[in-house]
Image 1: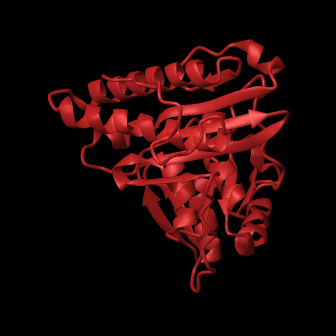
Image 2: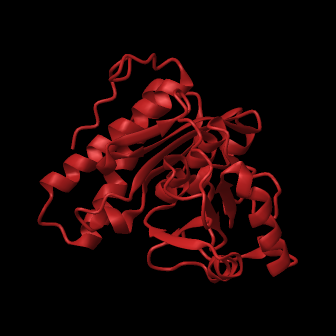
Length: 273
């Protein structure tokens, strides 16, 4: 599997000295690695394809970051954590393959690659590649926020394990549940206008949401914990159990619904996306 990262510019001419352009280039190139793997390794079982995808994308991104940003720290789902990142000014937060289940279920499209950069206390750049959908959303060219939607609020949820809290809120608000795959696909579906919100309380980690959140912010969407508090990244424990990404016009409604349902909503446990 090729992991060529020697080019000095992205495929569309972007300068890889620019962090925003690099986010897009890395997410796109890792996506191509995954698409080739899927096309070529047709004899693999779903479990083998999951493992191969995680491994190939991690190797590609690790090599690219070592080449282009050798002095920066990295937090990745698929690599051992290094506590040195807590003292670093710049930390790349990556999920080499978000939605391994969907990736392994060929020809499903709802999986993604996440690349985000945290610098001096906050997220500053990122990209979410959706390779099988032929789409990448990134902070170098943030997509426009969708127009307000007439009708019931549409909530993105896991297609296999929708969190009970979100189901209850949907019932209370008369909202529509829209099942889909990976966390990144659900969050960016708000930018597509497919849904109005991704409200999640089933447990996640920083790499699940960092890239979608920074892209959503750049496009003017609301992003927060489900109690309305800020999302904080590059912590010692990267577990980040819940989040809300939504159109600003529905944020207060959803946050109020969460508050009414639970006096302490941010104690959710689990690892679902």
